[in-house]
Image (cartoon, rainbow, N blue to C red; front, side):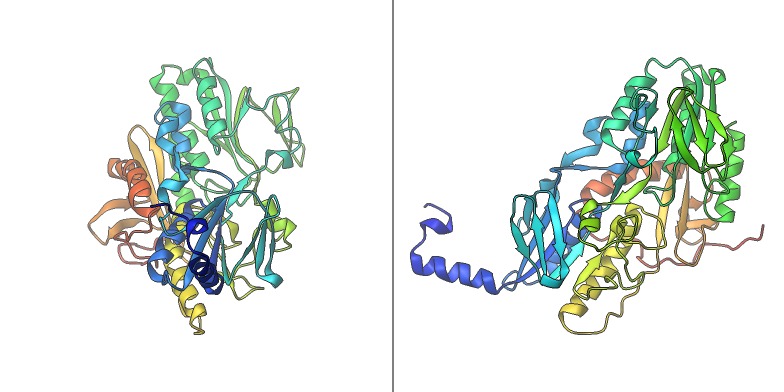
Length: 434
């Protein structure tokens, strides 16, 4: 039997194409963590006879971004963090791998590279954020991937791994250019892992580690900042706060702030400026950082009722992290269904985020917070039981970080339920005064 509509009788071909034209269309832009989760969740709840679901992404491979941190230290390999995106899309969902040229919300259509046009009834934007080293003068000049590296891309992490194999020591500077950036605890984790790595290599005394941040401490909130600052001090990692990078001087090998303070380096690992996808700018949908103005509770575009935004593409006042997309996904799904049915959007996202913080030597910490509540000490997810300790440096938290990679590939990406609530709870937490 020969499959495909072009081999079917003309009258049947007409019926199939006519039916397709009358199907409602859900379009998802971005096949990263957020977009893939939504595709997997929605294909279960949207009637396949009524809805056509399409997901568009320019890359065919999916990168487990929390794993990039481990590559420079030889803990993970490329194979641990990279898999084909098609492996995680439901069979019913149409996957298109293409650059996106422009979104035209007034016409309910998206233009792809090459001129292809996709219509939609509802649009989910999950185009994420990416590093932009070109936005900082000198950052991507002659020392880029020679003595200056990012670890937020697979290419950067692999290049840094190669460099560390033969590096003999000196001033290691771990720096953040500007907020917001994705995986907000990752530069801290890098500094902690570097301390452990060089100690295990027998050369910690040959390496000065300096953590440079535009924040006034190790984190944005005081309780977590106190705990993390103490951990940095314990590990003999110098912290330079309130440092706003103007440029990178390649000749002098130093960071230069706007107030002309210089920090020399022999090896610089840096979090470049993060910005949303350029298609957001071309489409006139974003702010000056290419993030879409999004209702922080309903996850609906402020300007367009049939556009929803999830993950790093949104300008939500919370962390740009995979956990945020995960906790937001149930809210988005419920509100999308309400919008389709003409009902008020009653589900509210509280900004819930949690992050494991790898601290080296087989230990880790954990933070859990939302829009209103800062990270607090306690136990998670079960009050008084845990097994994970909030703002505590323990082995079980390290195991949670390591196990999460399996959970990510097999459960989270596929939109399956996890035994944790989307809404943050105060159960197990305790407030403290500083």
